Length: 116
Image (tube, rainbow, N blue to C red; front, side, top):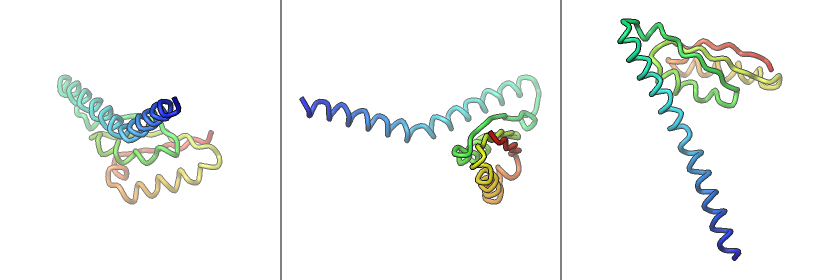
């Protein structure tokens, strides 16, 4: 009986790990799908996609996704970053590093850091 419960636990652990690995792909798919819909709507209304701003919010631990989002979106991006007091300086350092290292973040992303 012990081996059955171990197999179930192992299966759940593998499923959990698979979900963790697939989460970035799912997020990229969602951003791409929204972009495709926005481009289609803008084209239908003769409105340039470069004037459509993607607005989102994040915490400090998810700032790593900013290059992926800004690289997937062809217009401007506005990001509200929520940081507890201890993460405030870290948030500014990460954003500064992303601006120096990624052309899309530097050229298209506007950030607003809020202390929570």
